[in-house]
Image (spheres, rainbow, N blue to C red):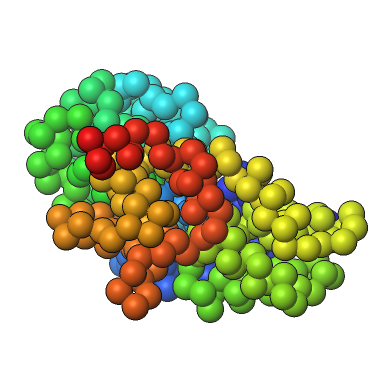
Length: 341
């Protein structure tokens, strides 16, 4: 039987395994389906579902759900993580190629070429929605001058065009110069933060997917939530591992914890690398039961928003046992030397 849990790569299209993003979908939908499309910046940590959400919106079946007349729109999606464009010409060429794949006549990969394409669409009564996955690869690239961002803002303000971007942080924090950071380009965006699942939503997803796979989880659901916390990636990974072990033989908590940790180690290493040094120190201190210094409370609060920590009776604790184990086994480094000198 096919494993109902999926963690190796983003979900594509309107996948039944896509869960618990109803409020975010409604917020984005209200912006891009407005009389004049608006722009949205989707922000979230590593593997929290940003690309899957973009893929959901780009799926024709999904578009039938949230657009009165999908035929009035042209959806162009650029995934910028792999082989990102290094300058505006390469960026516009990517748009040109995507446009031709949709049956368009193509355009010159220039500012004027893109503007001409947009004007042509408007003359046909169509609106352009441009989805830019991992747009931080552009804002951090010195090959894109301030004029590029001014131009893109002007196009959106003057035409029926909306941009939907994804990034690991707010875009203004991912700029290579202060001039770019202070550009009015970013003012056209509404920011939608993707957060970890609350326990109720995480439990609902695990139960539903296990049922759809024909392996109804009982206490295994609690094990999965304890190990994975609210991170969608870890929930899918741990659920996938539990489903696989049960199909192959007897499933117990220890076996699940070992197998899931082995599978999650690479992801946890990348997640650790995205944290600031202060956030890392807060996690290290939490792992050994130390109190968090008042001057580091801001970092602890950020880690709570990310879903890595919870607070009970005034003490910070890990929400996911897998992250707790990773920090204890791999995250100590020179922590004690810094702490005690």
